[in-house]
Length: 294
Image 1 (cartoon, rainbow, N blue to C red):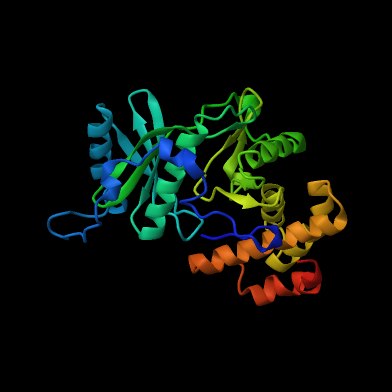
Image 2: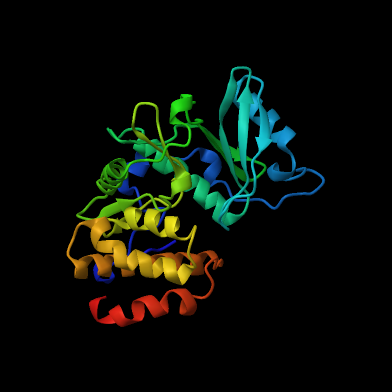
């Protein structure tokens, strides 16, 4: 994935996104081994087709009995299977499996990001912890901590605007060299208020740095709009609301919003998946008249 920041500078790739810090959390030696083609007779079914087998694998790795439950299909094209792991005490974690090359890269990237975030003094944002990361049947397997159970009074509560703003600012501060970071998929379904008032944030496989401040705020608002609007209408609303979301001048905010929308279209192009349809239909009519600002 390659996003673009203001002024035409590119954002860092997944491999570059955490800079030198990634070296502090090297991937297991299995990741350096060449990928072998599966032998249908010798290797067995894929992890997605054999939850009992992945449960047996995790039971061996964690040295305790584990059972897994397959979650519904993921929203995005690059995702692999996602499962819930349970042990004798209840839900033990969330299992992500990367079987295709894009999914493997996403799982590896999220593992590096989360291991690095574990060393950062975050006050507002609570990411999952990496409980296990390895390779099984040529698939990347990542076990993440499950979000803690919340008291009934918190069920269904939405994050306040102030909490979202604080989380966006804290994530943005993870950038380096004068650039800002963004979670990359800061959507309503990826954030939850914790019992202590912080924000539980899931799915960090899109994290990268080198973008203008406020991409996460725009992403959250854009996807809220998509629940009740067509993509073109949601893009126009995002552009119109940018000033209030970012707290900057109208021209700067609209420029940032335009860069954000172009980044999303570029992401879809690279994924080979266009859930909003061709950009000529939902994006160009909204940003073409801003070309002089970009």
